[in-house]
Image (cartoon, rainbow, N blue to C red; front, side, top):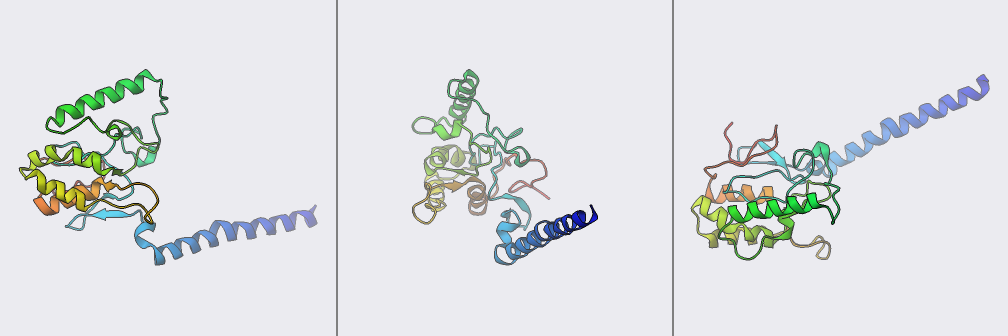
Length: 210
């Protein structure tokens, strides 16, 4: 019994040390040296050096002077601790009612927008945390943002176009804009909007006081 138990205990101890201690420490150390920004959550800071969010996680912006992301079904919305979709299928009446209500809200808040409401602005992503929107979805919101800030729409449109990220490696995905980064760029170029956006609890808002 002892002769069989001791090798098993030694194997368990070695495996625990290698996979439970040595490997995680090695990977963490390498990540901190080679990719410290990404390894620490791709945190984004404002001009005062305050952390205002992560470049990987969307957050809600409800005030008119800021661009809005796609809706979210993660927790109470854009909740990184409850990532997930609504799990509602294409035949769901609840999903349809939600999309219709969202489209009606967007039309009310964007009366000067040209064309129909972009479909992505009424549908959440599978994770509920996607921080990006397409250039078309951002440009659709330009009139509202420009009006709220008292800025020429052409200047806002130019800023949006300058912030478009291309396809990864030139071939993967689609052109896109990070909504948080775009809103921070708006504050830097045009000043903080009179109405500040609503950020998740514990995350500083762009342009908010200390």
